[in-house]
Amino acid sequence: MFRPTFAAALVVASLGAVTAASAHVVVGARVFPVTLTFDDPGVGDEATLPQFVLQPGPDGQLHYQIQWEYDKTITPTTALIYNQGYDIVQQTGTRTNTGIENAFLTGKWQTYTNPSSESVISLGVIEEFNGGSGTQSVGGDAYGATAPTLYAGQGAGFLPVPILRPLAITGEVNYVIANRRLNSAADNNGNPNSLTAGLSIQYSIPYLQSQVKDYHLPEFIGRLIPLVEFTWYTPVEAPANGFPSTLTIAPGVIYVGDTYQIGLEALIPGNKATGSHLGVIAQLHFFFDDLFPNSLGKPFFE
Image 1 (tube, rainbow, N blue to C red):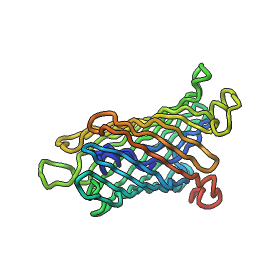
Image 2: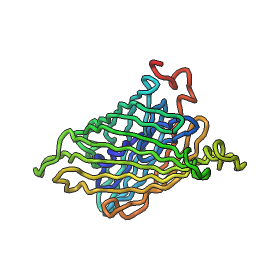
Image 3: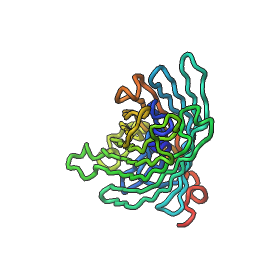
Image 4: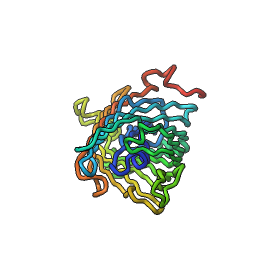
């Protein structure tokens, strides 16, 4: 879940950067993997260690991010999630800026889970905390924000065409309320309130093999989930100078192991404001509920 989607908007909106993701979700026969550019629809005991992002931006900027995340369940359906990272911003003719990203803390509640229909819905609130001067030097907000959030996932196991049943979608929508709102004053370092959203379209080869037909594929192929992710940001109030609407398209693939997953996606600018060059995002994510089922991998209250 790192990187809730809105982190991209608040930390480096002008670069069209992305932030990271979280929890893999098991709903009946369906496993929703950890997406890379926005959060997933459930809760779990997990960690991203690390996630790497390279995002070229407008005006020849190169933005590198090394991100991390820890998800801890409080009860089987609630969790607290911590996200942060380290940024390096380079541009020809200027000095390199570095800094720790703002920290994000999410309270999340998996409110609805229906195994028979492969449906899941969660609600959350994401709080961004000011990270100090290092964060501001790489474009971060000095004041933070609060974002009520809706998450959802839906598998296609109900479709009458068997070959389409491995399809699934997940999504996230945030309404970001800036702790200090932007106004027309030149010295105001705040942000506009904004909307951000993420959508993934997935095709699960593990689901194809186990629930549709065993094609006797090699084990490596049988653990892959090809997908494409879309993340979008737009301010919802004027003035929004310096905060243009951005769209990023991220096609890639996820390998799901027994206790971890590895993901790799391209970052394709979807509009001029997002940039004109391809980026890349890579993630290593561990499932503590599988690695440490009797300690770190179980809720505080069961």
